[in-house]
Image: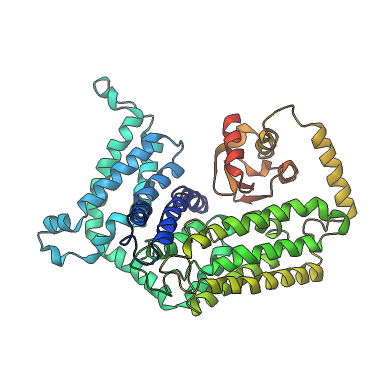
Length: 488
């Protein structure tokens, strides 16, 4: 189950990666026409309409993303199957068709059916079914007279028929499911700022497992009726309320994490500061600009769990404060400067400049708390290693540099060392990547050599269960993943 949830969370990253494009388009439109939603300017309408097209079809994108992420091979057939399954279900469950099927008046149709067309949960269900069908039937051979429909061509057909049964099942139970999801969403919204704070706290705690994406789907998308990101980019937003599950991340990502990075740099030994400066500088700048914080978080996550727990508490506190004060801003990818800048002109943003003031406080908080705890507990963050450890690292680095292959590809050595470090090609069953890490499904993860992988340049290694391992790379993970795929 853990492995399944982890793979599902990873799969959600593919459709989520489309959101920055939508946010950029809508952000440009808001800057041109900050109050009319495009009604006062044709150019603004053009950009807002284009971005809105992505948000209005997010469930379909989730269906495709989950299908590709959960299948054994990222084949086009599984994506086509997801589209086929999704359009069958959503067409059959349109309110007018439900009225005909149940022989009732359209006004008596349960309002839950109005949401099927862009409900992320429906997209995830169809994506999972499509991936299962592909994994089971993509090599199936039919009799000679049906041979044309064998293999991959069979998958969309099977999903289309399964979609009929899914539609019938949802016709009977969707009002109950949707009512329960909305009830859950309302219970969290009913907690107001406290609910936002709890979300922020658990969002950070789940980062090491990779399961935070599943939690995000509940609050950010239309899984439980909250849809904080989508509503923030629409007229459905309630000013000062919608965005409460996003705004509090800006002070943490843009200010808190850079403050932590600076604290760890200043806590390093004098003769080691130059050596570790690149790690913290690159990680801090990445967090500020894009809101991607894992390159810094994985530096102290396992070395100092107490620091990471404090980080999670401070994140929850930030979301609680922002929600309590009704300061709102939104993002399409993550809470970095780029998304902050784009949301400034969004008419739903409420006192977004106050998030910068809170951010300044958070920079100071993170800096002094991290410096104090590091010194108090003598935590061996990068640059604080003992002389023996430094000597060993220098010796290993010298050996590694002498053994570097003669290649023009900057990621070749890292990819080779990662493959060998997880037990070699024969130990790898699948490998995928998310925004900052490679995710391996292995035959035996006891063969993983964490020290070797880290020496090659990876930020960190995480072993989960008996078959899963994650290698934290950073924002250039896609380039490394491409080379790993080539070598495999």
